[in-house]
Amino acid sequence: MVPSHQHMGQQLENKTPIKLWGIFESIESGPSGAEELAFKFALNTINRNRTLLPNTTLTYDIQRINIHDSFEASRKACDQLSLGVAAIFGPSHSSSANAVQSICNALGVPHIQTKWKHQVSDNRDSFYVSLYPDFSSLSRAILDLVHFFKWKTVTVVYDDSTGFHPVDQLLSFYQDVCPLEEFVEQFLELSHHMPWNDGMLKVCFWSGLDNPISQLMPMEETSCTLIQYMDYALWLSVSSSTVGDVEGPNPNNPASPEPPQSTSILPKPLGSSPPRGSRICPRPLSLSVLHFEHSVDTGQIVK
Image (tube, rainbow, N blue to C red; front, side, top):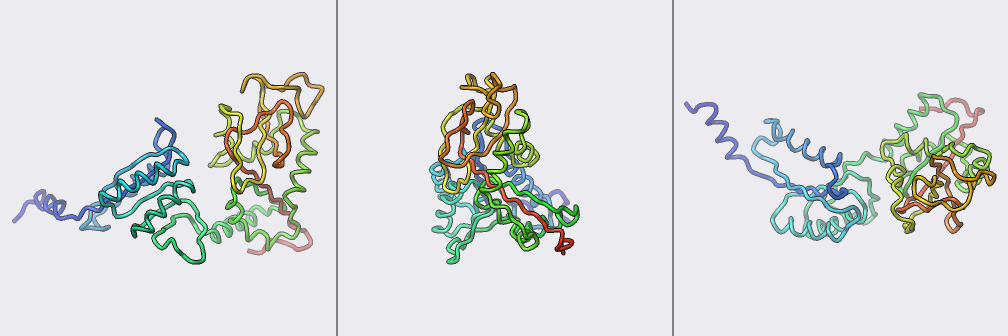
């Protein structure tokens, strides 16, 4: 009879290794991101479970690249594929992800992503697998949340061209939809009567998990490159202690000699000049606002 520990060793030796490659975007010398930690945890959990892939051991190699560096992503993908990998996980940002996806399509290697991607009608990305929840499910979840709290008005703030898709079903239950331009004009008009340190949109963004505004706060640059789907650019009205010298008085209160020690956020249409006392955001970002209002005459929202 073979001892149990020897039997376990033979099982490990007989297992077929399958190598996966993960590519993650991170700041230089920064900590591991949530996607990278989840990737490691998932593979280690599968390997510890003897009922899942009992004759297989999953191994992985992790590579980090700079954010939006599609050339580096393509180069490392080619290097890893030349060594032999079963699948590639990531990256998340569109430019790098599209570059890796093109290579995977050409070589027939599965490409796994966690970010939503619009599927074209010709389905050319046949080796693409997305772990992102279906938008119809997300839209239904948001609708159930609105129904549970009995909200009569809803304002949706999203920061890219795909952010509106999860709320599509809200349109069928809300009759009065305030256009984007009208809402922004109303906000800008009201902002002149608001206290300087009252940041309405700041609260909306800072309450979320994915916080693009907090990433903008270190004002290291003063130029902003427009992206393809940018609807509005954010002008940050900041204090002199935050970014150095700030020209002019408070744009919302000309009588004020200098801005207070706080930061407020104002949307400005593309093509307009920034208010005095402001600096442009250091990286491209879009802001879109849709305002839904549920008419009382239509009754309760139906699930």
